Image 1 (spheres, rainbow, N blue to C red):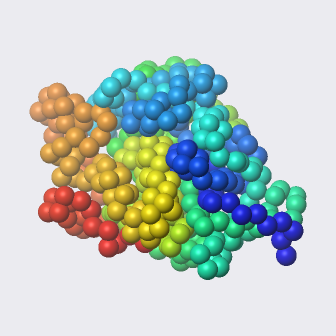
Image 2 (cartoon, helix red, strand yellow):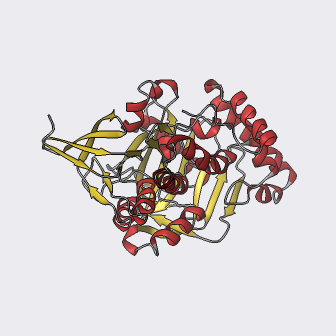
Image 3 (cartoon, rainbow, N blue to C red):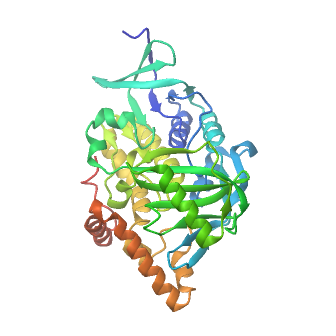
Length: 408
């Protein structure tokens, strides 16, 4: 039995940027909001920290200037550089100028504290039960007894491996492919890669997601691949490639490497999960992830939408799920457009001008880039996403939005 029971209006699981955005909306509306986080705060967060312009605007508008301690060095990022097996490289500046390089441990904590919500760190989510119109959330404080909270609404803002999502859909993790994304840190001997940019490789032999950038005097070498492969071998292969092809000379990796499980699929194929009843799923837990793996901007915006949906439902006594799904459709469009080949070819769904950078290349290089991108996309063939992506792309063209019938 739990030793304590407390009632609040909304419980948010996970002290993430999505949680901070939702909590800010709810607190401003006068709703008593509690955030629970399994780790001690401020907690470490595995992330490159390269924020998109849209995410930067959201933080400025909702939380104010970012404090210096919430930034890595270099403190800003100018844009992204794509590299291809044909040795063509394309640098693209972000629209609107440079963006901050967030130190997620302190940036997330700053946003959470600024939200106005009450925060309980070192408190693990155990289970979720529904009792009438109330949600019963059972937690455990580190080293302590179980504690129960009761609320009308719950938000799962607890990342791709979301326990809240699993409590609603226990079989969901087995229905989707999972990837491992890891990064190691190297002292730099010589690195010709421009530290003002985030570097990404469209190279099928390097893995599903390969990147590098400077951070706090070291160089990150990151790799993403289907879960089950050997991280250390994959990383070494990429490090060797960077040295052989780009002249990147690094000292052996430091001991403080890190990695986590990620799900890239939902935003590609419009297979989001938004919850049941008065329980909402948001951020990366719901499936939001931008094309270069930046999830902070869509986490902030989807979190805010989750908070706004609860406020609207509570004030006007409306059913929450239809309301949330109607409101979140704008974020679905924005995120899935980034993976939509028709939008990429004929529009500008990203925050850097890929079409202009491509057209600035000589014709031979343009053809090489298109060939290399096709070969990279074929890496995902085993997941059978091609037909689904094209079907959703055609639906977007026909209806002006992505159908919600496939959302959970």
